[in-house]
Image 1 (tube, rainbow, N blue to C red):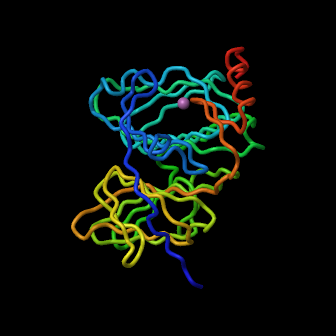
Image 2: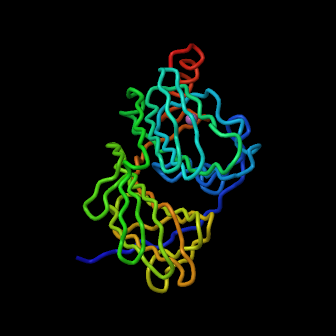
Length: 283
Ligand code: CO
């Protein structure tokens, strides 16, 4: 069967910003250069070994209408919510939170120094699921399957399927793929992604190349590549250096999006309702 290799449609650099009570981070999706990539609403990378950049954390705040995926590479973050749930995010762990009709939670550093490094991705929910019951999928590092290839490449399957192995998390509405891929110098990775899914690569160590042939494009550390339609993703490390990146894909929703901070709905009226419900303590 013919394969259509996805090329790099565009490259986007993150924008330094502050969120929570003053946490310094880089916003890659959800900023003027890339306001959204349906169904993805936001991608942040937080990475600092200066406590002042993260110590204030994210005190109590609400979410409604989408899912948040937090993936920790270094550091420890305690989360707690208004339903009495609590948990500790530690290096290599994932929290997949379906905010649904509403949650009020906090995400606070559980360390006073050292490196804090990770990502938060927001994935939209379709209209029919926006008011679903909130739920968490907390995934310990050892529950995330990692594939080691003979060429030294390493693929952590947070969501999706590689070599017949399923990822730790599933989300029916958008059928996401979320892979953490480490490639040694000169190696490459090919992966089938449904052709109707939106897909991006975010490089967080070294540089990578995506695509094939003349159109293969270099992606520098800190850049996000939006991939063209196609059914196969091809990623390679440069010949002299290793690379590490996220490959993320999901089914677009193709619905209207109205966002107001931590509320993402389909209409203005639903946003007003969300604000009203939050103020009235109905989350
Ligand atoms: Co939050």
